[in-house]
Image (cartoon, rainbow, N blue to C red; front, side, top):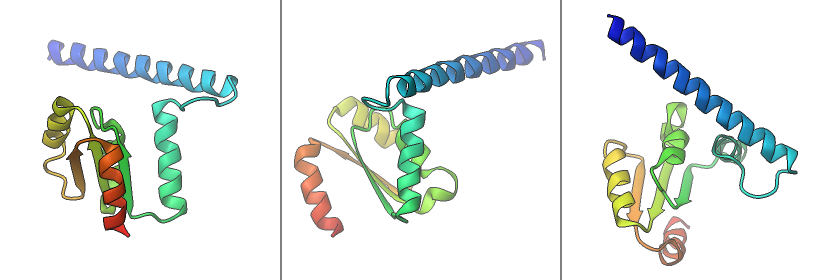
Length: 125
C-alpha cells in the first residue's frame, strides 16, 4: 500500500511539473506577441476550435511524431472525426501505427507528406 501511495504522489508531482512547464511556455508565447508556433496545449485547443467552428469531419496531420496531438483530437466526443496522419520516419510511423491500431477512425500513412498530401486531398474531394 505504501508503495502505491508513493507512486501516486510522484505522478501528481510530475503532472504539476508538466502543467507549470506548459503554463510558462504559453505565457512566454503570449508575452512575445504570439509569434512562431504555439506551445502544444495551445495548438491543440486552436485545432479543436477550428474543427468545431467549421464542423469539420476530417483532420489531416503531417508529422505524427509520437501521436499526442492525434490522440488529443480524437479523444472523447470527437471519436467521429476521421483522422489521418502522415509520418516520414519509419520508426515513428511503426510506433504510431501500433499505438492507434485499435482506433477505426485513425489512418497512419508512411511517406513524404509533400507527395502524399496532394493525392489525399484529391481523394477527399
